[in-house]
Image (tube, rainbow, N blue to C red; front, side, top):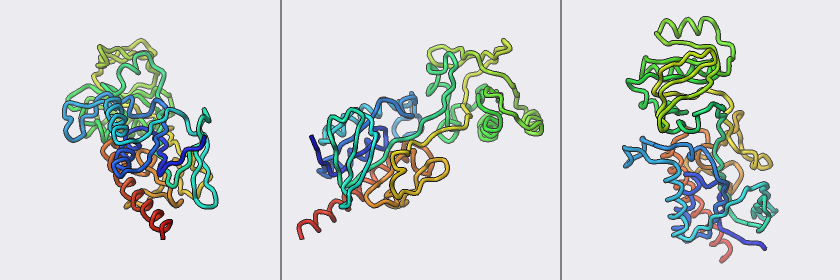
Length: 308
C-alpha cells in the first residue's frame, strides 16, 4: 500500500514534532516516523525553557507534542526508517523496517538527533537528567555552590572542568575511561584547586536520582551532588542522508541554509541536534518552526506550477 504525504518527518523528538505541528496547522498531510528513545527522553527537568522555571521533562514535551500534532491531523508512525530514495521527478520514497507501507512525499525532514556514549555504571540511569548532566550550556547553573564531579575520558574531562569552573570551584575530575592525561594538564587542575582521580567509577549512590556519593574502583567514596559526563563519541544520526548531495561535516552534523534549514539537496530539510549549532530544546523548536514555514512555501510553489 502506497501512501503519499506532503512531508515525511524522520524523527519524533522535539524538533520533529514542532515541525509537524506547524505543517499540520498549514493543512498539510504530514507523517512523523519515530522509534522510542532519543536524547530528550533522558532529560527529566529542563529548567532553561521559557515558562518552565521549575523544570519540564523531555518525555512530557514529547507526549504533549504528539497529542498536539495529532490534534491538527499529523500521522504518527512508530517504526524505523531504513532507506530513503528519490526518483527523477524528486519524489521521495521512505522505506521502513516493518515495510507495512511505502511512504512517498514531496518534501523530507530529518530530525534524527544524536546518540550519546553513556557509561555503564550502576545508578547512572536513575540520576541522568536529574543530577547528572551532559551540557554545561544547558545545566552549568545546576552546579552553583555544589560539589561536582566530571566523569569522563582524559582530555575531554579536563576540558569540561574548564567550562564548569565558571560556575563552581568545588570540582573533581574522574578519568573513568583512563585515557592518558598530560602531566601538565593534571598540574593545572591542582593549581586551580580541582581534584583529579585516575580510576573507574564503580557505582553512583543516590536518593531518588539525587546524587550523593561516587564510589571509585579503589573503594574511595567521593561526596558529590552533581556530575557531568565528558566522553567523546556523541554521534549525529545522519547516515540516511549519505546517498544525497547533503553537506555533512566530519563529526556527522549537517550543514543547512541558516535562514530556511534546507540542506544542499533540494526539498530535504534538517532540524534539531543533527544541525551544526548549539544543542538546545529552544533551538530545536525554532528549527522546526522555521523549516516548516519554508516547506509550506515550497509546497505552494509545487501547487502553483502543477495548476498552471
